[in-house]
Image 1 (spheres, rainbow, N blue to C red):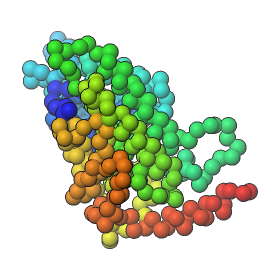
Image 2 (spheres, rainbow, N blue to C red):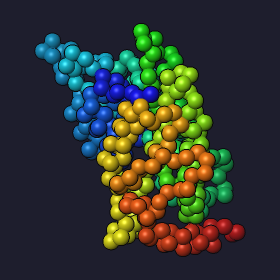
Image 3 (tube, helix red, strand yellow):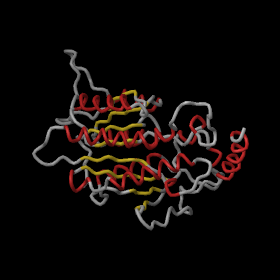
Image 4 (tube, one colour):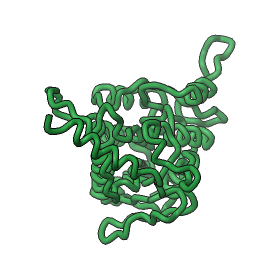
Length: 309
């Protein structure tokens, strides 16, 4: 069930940087309004929002509200959002509907790569907090965002023909890999992939498609603490624009049905099977991380430093 994005509206969490910024730019270029829900915007993202602001007529009224038509320009707006705060997520959905009238595409793309402030190997045994921020951001937030999307889709006024809606998640090849240095990240992506497949049947019943892309090694800010894992003499980064192009293909492609998880490398894509999948081809371009051994050694050091004291 394809969704043609021209004239539609998308809500994208994490659109202030990385893959979701690239996807937001691509949506705008294809005449799709975007609400970017994030904590902050990179300068590039801020420029994108500012450049798409509606013009103001001589009588002081702004032009370009609502769904694009009659030659109006697609717009991007920013809603400051902590995706771990359910109230703020709800406000993002309220804002996108009030700003544009409806929303047809939701991308819960905000994520973290198990940073030092929420890392399994750097625990705080004195905290009273009973959660992990990495899991809140990477797993709980997209699940909650999906609930809010379903509720919003069902509340929107019916149209003469059934409206097609899509929820597109971003998982990772890490969902299929044992990654000692970042076990929370791997677990979050594996859990998300299972969640997406579980909602696959919604498409036939409700015209709501839940699918995902699973990128390999993408050059985005989430690698800021672990860029030494990538040996740039041997390993190859994937640009976020490559992932964004594939994401648009999934949204607009009839062949990508509900429950699809599409792995994305530099030069290849692969459907990840729910059962009996052989796993990522780590020899393909954009998959290798030659310096991860340093991360493994560092993990054993953290085990000795932070546990049993």
